[in-house]
Length: 312
Image (cartoon, rainbow, N blue to C red; front, side, top):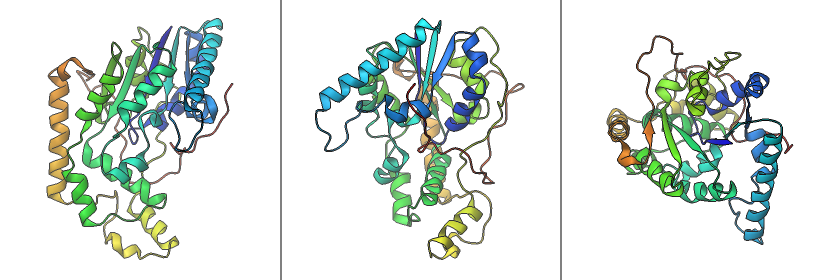
């Protein structure tokens, strides 16, 4: 059985992709493909894989998690499934940790190694979506402010722009944790608005993916108007965000240029072979592509970090 892990990253249309899979679940199961999303993974299935501070009997918890996962895989195999997509961006960490560390997924390697062990070495492929760093951090900061984080001050923004950890380091950590596992990297700028192409690439499909609800746009980062409302409700001065409208862009021109240059370096490294660690997926033509979602308006969707469900 092919077991494919889609690990985000956050702010790369993961919630929209998961909603697309749910909308087409029946059609996909008819082709022998099923998926587990956050509704399943975050309600007990993955409990114990990553230790929580103060948790007793950590080794026992990890063994129980491995057993639960194996049982679920055996069950879907008996039902005739040939491929399983596990999609949960929290596998490699949480955006609030990135904001606290002013760095990308510092614990990604260790977390990935624990999840690989929980799947008993049965993972076939891991898929990571990456995004230009200035828009990634702007979106993550906007999302964090909407969830109670303070507005970043100039020193904080400079620390983010100066920190050396980029997608290359994240990918290197993931590869070290996944010896022998194929690692695919999909740029958000190309595939963010095309969940059907993401699915075809993940599964190496020789069939056209379904297109039911394939242009959803969920869990967008709040724009400036929405953030002003958030600040007002918190008793803070909305004027701190200035007079502009549209997307939240806290970095100055120099900082944006630095972050974009770092991302271009990442893409160049990937296009050059990534030292054999990962494979960059690109499209030769944009004629049939969808539109990468813009961030100028706010529509409430599913929350990446608060999806609920239960283990089957």
